[in-house]
Image (tube, rainbow, N blue to C red):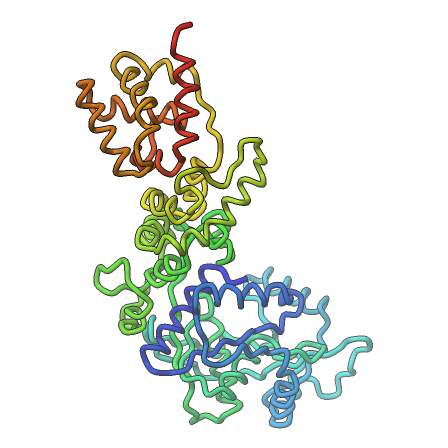
Amino acid sequence: MLHLGTARTALFCWAFARRQGGQFILRIEDTDLERSTEHNVRAILDSMAWLALEYDEGPIRQTERLARYTEVVQQLIARDQAYRCYASRQELDELRQLQTARGEKPRYDGRWRPERAKGKPIPAGVTPVVRFRNPDLGAVSWNDLVKGPITISNSELDDLVIARGDGVPTYNFAVVVDDIDMNITHVLRGDDHVNNTPRQINIYRAILGEGAVLPKFAHLPMILGPDGQKLSKRHGAVSVLQYRDDGFLPEAVFNYLARLGWSHGDREKFSREELASWFDLDHVNRAPAQYDINKLLWLNGEYMKEADPARLAKLVAPLIEQRLSNMNPPGATTGGEGDSSKPESIVALLKDRARTLNELADEAMLFYLEPHIDPNLLRQHLIGKSLDAVREFAQTAAAIPWQRTAIAALNKQLITDFGIKLPQLAVPLRVAVTGRTQTPSIDAVLELIGRDKVLARLRAALEVVTPR
């Protein structure tokens, strides 16, 4: 799946390519056949589409290039830069245990290198893997575009498996061949790939020659959870599509990911176009970024405030239908006399109060369900002059145009006539019509619920508080 860390990497690649006028290539590295299911590939493509990370080439799937990898493996074997290894899994496990017991770093010891395997019988029943012959001497150095100069001694590296027994290449080998064939100039990836880079650089040089121009590498900071530990599913390491399902807008997630480890001054909110014009690796932090769900919720809320109500209404409609279907109450409704048949009006009223589409759908149920009116709450609020004002509202409202401005004018007249303040009328009306003490502006809420429903609920409420 495309989780937050992978999505952030893809976004940085996209932004860097756009800023530099380059090409952003989507490559599906699917040589791990157990994990790379069609379901997972589709989830990656859907996540990229949701975030609108348009790629210029691809998707290119490694499993469609197996013949090319085999060709390069054979070239390396012919040049004595790779060899077949017949060590069994049990044999390698025993080697690892022995090295660990001696306090040594577990590593392959080169026992099937050609000079050491001369005259050694090939064991029956063992399908060989192919290992890259890593240089014994010297060091690998590169100037990382985020982390700065890095040097790793070849003595720290063992002979890496580059092709499994079934001929399928391993990640570290396949990506090098791909990068060469696709003329990759820059590789941006997570910090956890730093240890792969010296191995890959040695493979580049084995294929291309010592003087070859290699891609530039940039290793991006890790994303940590709120507790400072590696991001877990509990703290957000879930599929990008889960954020879609949780009611986040793609532009908010895009914006949030861009700020995880990169900054442009103190700007927190910016457009895709602004990111594409600003992004550079000089402003990528070396220190890990920290995931903060509250900041994402705030940012999503800001984008919802700006969003077109018609667009939000389309996005929230299936969420409302789902809630109605799940609850399936006798009083479920899809509209009323007022504007509740127009979801855009409901969204326009509520969107400034919601941080996600799911919250918006929850709040919108105010206009789709018959409320539970607590008699005790009615008796608490429909008292004295407030009761008289509500009773007068119920009598007068039948004759006014059912529009927000007219309802507001009636409320203003009533608080003047009865010598009360607006909350002394608005709160009792809210309780009588919605069962709540807090809603958006009462005139807007009453307009959307519709005259017939408002008056019916007011009559029922007045019966509860009126002595017989």
